[in-house]
Amino acid sequence: MPLKKLSKAKPKLPAQQTVLTWDAHVLMAGVDEAGRGPLAGPVVAAAVMLDDLQPIKGLADSKKLSAIKRERLYDEIRAKALCFSVAQASVQEIDSLNILQATLLAMQRAVAGLRLKPTLVLVDGNRLPTFPMRAEAIVKGDAKVPAISAASILAKVTRDRLCHDLHTQFPHYGFATHKGYGTAVHLAALQTHGACAEHRRSFGPVARVLGV
Image (tube, rainbow, N blue to C red; front, side, top):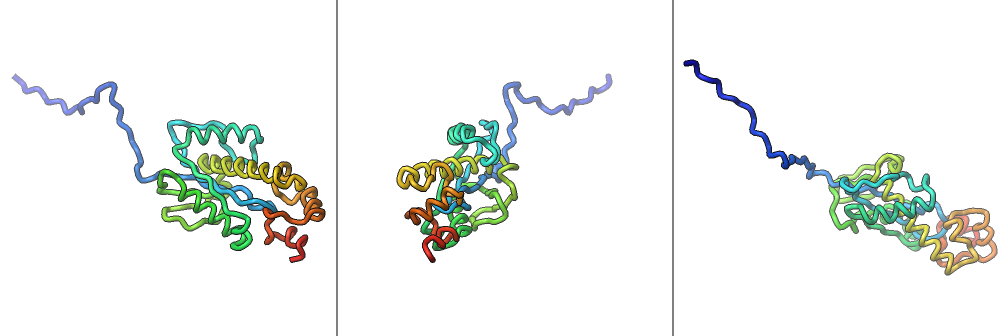
């Protein structure tokens, strides 16, 4: 009687069991800032780590979104992200360090404030702060990387709200409208009223008004 060949088929997993693959080496945070160009107020940076299990639709460069959509996404990001952190560098730090170094400092603070420690940080732009983990700068990253888009939205909405607060303190400058940028209305108000405590004295238009 001929011998039967033994089957070498692999054992099947139970139907309800799923094999998950998880890359434990990459925990990524996106970083962006708002407020480098204005003549007043702090520069704000945000860091966001998104949750793949809770996708957020409509993420994009914050400058391309309407204020209403930014506000909606702001709440959704805060509710669904694995973690997030928002930080800033003050007007005094901007004037003492320069705007670039103050921006990098705000980004460092945002990453340091994350509840989870990322293994990779992706930063919008072409300049990188010093981080204790691997980091990459991505030009136009706020349009390419969802986590950076989310960070840009948190930073923008936070800074816009700060400008509304400034407006209540210094209503004659129009901060609620121009958000501190050097518009004709803002420059005219500077000429009429001089600089307030939140104006960046290291910026040319403010320095000229002060005769520095």
